Image (cartoon, rainbow, N blue to C red; front, side, top):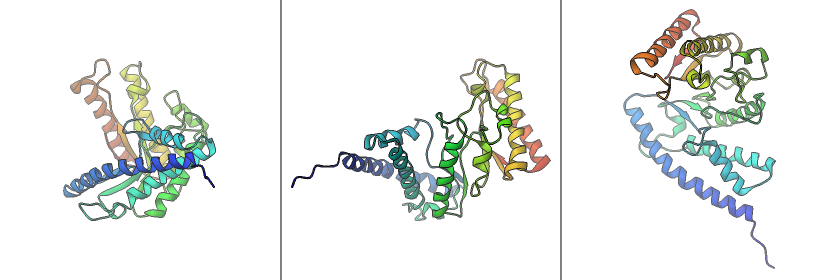
Length: 275
């Protein structure tokens, strides 16, 4: 009896091989990065994947999955399983240089689910929230010793509609409040790029937005979410008209750091900032 090959099965095998080859090369390089960080006393925030196409990102997962399956429901299941497979391989990897498993290495201070997750098909934040709940449980089932955060920019969603006015005039499909309330998320994060988000507005308007953005998340992290806030990304682009290291950028940074310092003195919710 002749049995036809299953095309989807063949495609999945191909995808698995692509994953294996890419992961082997990438993780070997990460072994070195982690060992060097350990040598110099640097603690790492380890992001599992990027939302954007840089370095492949979320879109690469979608492309691989679409090659293997066309059903929308099954595609979602495949994508989630790809992510989990990647997470497990990373966390349980034995560093070839330090001989320490990633999940046991104190050099890795924090696991981050995704750099700037967004969902353009559901601006309420519920889709991302469901994904976060599933992946938080999975990560913590492998390692409940390291800190864990989402990687969010801080956009508000439907759980508190009145807070959406704080957003820079649009939404990206995340909900700062509901997702960070998930039990095993250890601290909140925000990013801030007012020169990009408010492109075309003058520097005074952008600075006013920045101050309001930080202050609102500082207040909500302390009073509603009741977790520390880390401002993990902010800055100004050198592509802006009139950009200068000694003028617009330094002025922006000085103001932001002063505001962060003042807020920390007034409440202690802010756990740190990175630029």
